Image 1 (cartoon, rainbow, N blue to C red):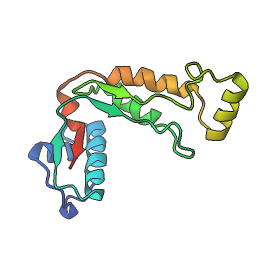
Image 2 (cartoon, helix red, strand yellow):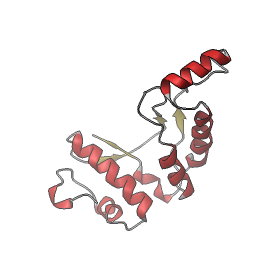
Image 3 (cartoon, helix red, strand yellow):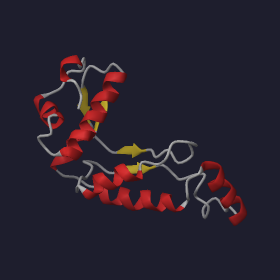
Image 4 (cartoon, helix red, strand yellow):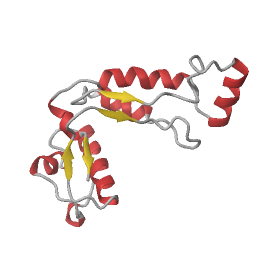
Length: 143
């Protein structure tokens, strides 16, 4: 857990409560991640997201596996986003739409070490978490 005594970012009582596990371990971990990211960027505070966003999955970064396990946990906990979002296209793994031949596709998969089938998983999971509920305030931007 985050050491609250050393935080420079200012958090609301609701954000502190979530950080103290008041709404479950999944939201607590998400808030901890957002707060640490904000701290790294020297943000003063978190702000509410006020409109649709864009979700990026690091498919084409060798050595950075897609966060499928994390997304599965969020979807499994029933979390929904407050606003809809777009999802990054899946190059270089969009073999069908990029007209990649099987031999080229196999070479791309070997080079990046990520099976193309995982991109379908990200699409399925993103459909599960799109929507809105009371827990969607956790998805915030840092300023």
